[in-house]
Length: 187
Image (cartoon, rainbow, N blue to C red; front, side):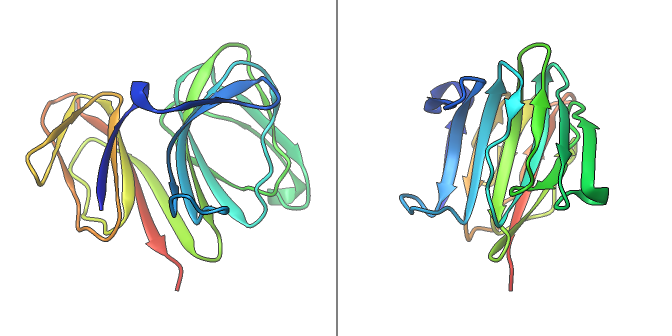
């Protein structure tokens, strides 16, 4: 299963707290009450708490805009607390059940991958060269153009997700940058 997507064509959902919106790329398995893994792009407009997701690991990557400060005070976080400023294109992992507050001074957008801890794991990286093949994953073009095996080309703000396929992408321009999320099942 291989599915392409374009940022501007993704459905938009406003957050209940009014602090932002989410464009869901995929929630897997489709139609299930609880996801095994989920990928989305969020836009933060205001400071506020992140939603809690018990049993879920999250990786957030700032795509553009203000660098939000993430803070929390909980035994679930390293050393009982955190104060971390997101930097562009630097994936950051945290537990979904940890209470985290985001402070923003302007609009920003980020890529989110959430995996149910007992069944899936995600590794997120920013690449300029062809990644190793992955049987499951999500890729999002940050710059340039990338081609996959069928010969189709993805451009900035386009992406692809796949399951049970040996997929890789090849850069087609010198400025090519890719957010690459390799998903693997927990055995």
